[in-house]
Image (cartoon, rainbow, N blue to C red; front, side, top):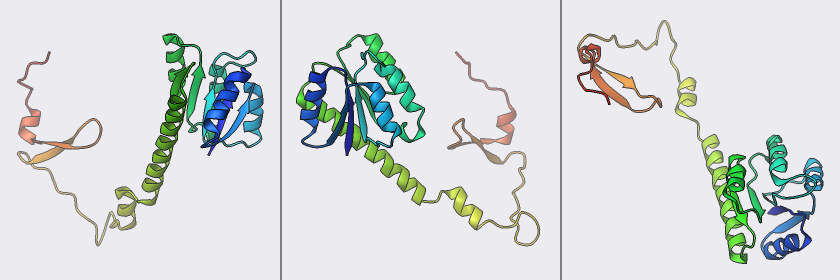
Length: 192
């Protein structure tokens, strides 16, 4: 797995490389512009660590530009910054960051955060693959559907007054069965 690390401070970048190199391949850049160029040339990271305060292109702008690329939208993004103000944290999370670590951080904290985000990403991919491999009910019923008219067509049951009929909830799931007579009556319950 390839981790992309971006930080304009050489010491911080070297620290991240040293911590992660034992478990991952690390590609690092001292400039967000250089990282964008590498991504444009086909670099496919499994996760991105990015500083917020950089002179040429700040981390928030880099993140926004990155999310324009469909292939990179799903890549976990972690801010790694000295900015510990809540407003910066909130701004990063609102842009869609997966995590926000403040400097100084411990070795265990960085390794755990990266491992957690990669595991979550792998679980999401597995879930999506599982859903794609399993046809949904609508797909299978289309394959075995009966003709709408003529021989073999299924007739819809007619609703008669007094018979129960399903009312589907807002989310389209579940059903509440009410009598046709009681459904027409006004509610006796007081609403707050």
